[in-house]
Length: 67
Image (cartoon, rainbow, N blue to C red; front, side):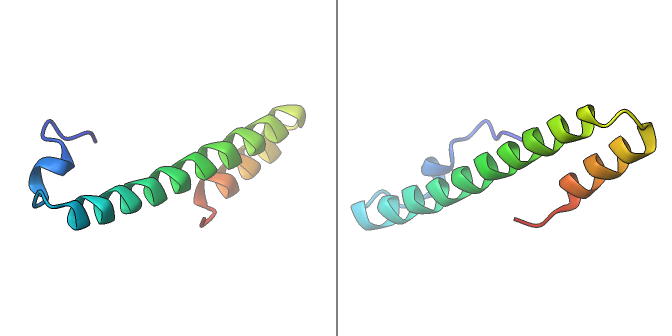
């Protein structure tokens, strides 16, 4: 869920704190992008399989995989 108030508004406005916030946000973004990539790859693999229960199993495993 996206907040209406930017996270930077809740952070003290000094360079060190904002720098730490930027690094944290970049790590979160990278993790989210990796998860999206993995889900896309597993989704493609699931679609290639013509047997429906196997597609569901592959998709479920991909969603539950820990980064």
